[in-house]
Structures are given as C-alpha cells and as structure tokens.
Image (cartoon, rainbow, N blue to C red; front, side):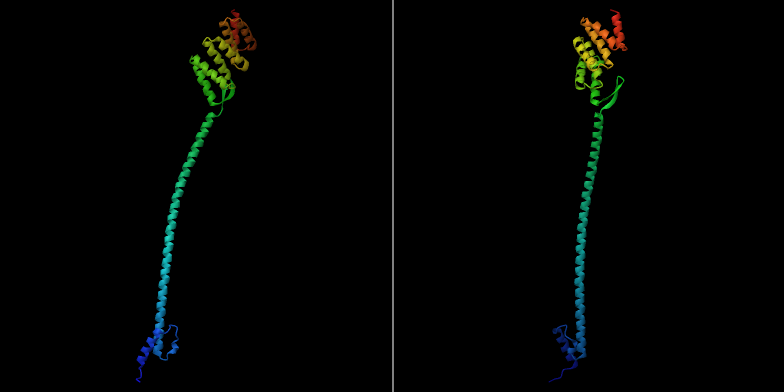
Length: 251
C-alpha cells in the first residue's frame, strides 16, 4: 500500500472536519496542521455565526426602532388632533361664556328697568315701577294736551291698574277734571268723590271738593254751597279753600 504524504493526510483530515460536528475536540487528530486547520475553521464558523447574530440583532433593533418611530408618529397625530379639538372647544367655550355674559348684562339691564324707583310726588317720596310711571305720564300728557276724551280713558285704566300708586290721587283727580272738561258733571262728581274717599289726605283732595262744587253748580244743585263750606272747614289753609270763600262771599 502506498503511504500518504503529510500534505495528503492534512487535506484528508480537513475534508473530514467539514462532516464532523463543530464541537468535536481537536485532540482527536494527531497532526498539528490538521488541528490548526480545524481550529481555524471553527474560528471562521464562530465569526460567521457572530456576524450573522449581529446582523439579526441589528435588524431586530432597526425593526424595533422603526416600530417606535411609527408609534411616535401616530401618537403625534393623535396629539395634534386633540389639540385641534381642544382649540375648537376652547373657542366654543369662550363664545358661550361671552354669550352668557351678554345675556346676564342684558337681563340685568332689563331687570333694572323693571325695578321700582323712588320718585317725589307732591312732596312725598314713593316707589313706582317704570311701567307705572310711563302709563301715568302718557295719560297725563293727553290731559295737558287737551285731549280730554282720550285722557279720561287712559286715566281710568291707570287708576284701575294701579290703585295704590303714588300717582293714583293725582290720576283720579285729573280723571274727574277730564270729565268736567267734557261737561260730564255726573261722571266728574263720581270720580272726585273717590279722591275724597280714598285719598283724603292728598294735596288733590281740596281741589277735588272744589271741582265737585263746580259740577253741582253746573247741575243747579243746592248742595254746592254746603260743599264749599265743608271745603273751608276741612282744608282751611288750602288755596281751594280761599277760592271757596270767594265764591261764598259773592253769593
């Protein structure tokens, strides 16, 4: 049998290592070159394994990083959407608050217009609401303008609606005067008797009695003289009492 050379043996051993498990111990071979070749091969295989693992790990890291970037982008989009919604809600809230403030300001203004106000009527202070005051002033304006028919209607409505008003004595007296100006003496007497009954301590009471006496005279009623006498007794210091004295003195 032909004897193998050292180089042939080394080649055979190197080829054999490819089929043997990578964990086989180098001590199985006596040849130093074969052992060295085996170790070199193992080193290369280990290097390749390490490089492959590194590439796998690197790819995994990149995938993880890419996933995180995608998640971050999605989160940023959601945050931007929420910011937009918050901005819209903030604007709506600001507008709602402004509308509410305007509503309360308007409501307060309206309520203030409806609140009773203190006025001085015939030297006395009284609480009257704005509608009450406007109603009297409108009726009185008709009376002053000489529209006695319209004034009598407006004054009648006023005293019926506001019998306890500070303007009521004045309105009731002017109602009688408006009837008298229309030569409706019976209605005038009836209206002025209400002044004497309900507002006997008002400044209009003496003039109401004088008006009654005038109506009685127009009606040829003898009670006119007694009415003048009662006027002087009940309201002696009033201008109406002086007028009554003059009328009685002339008779």
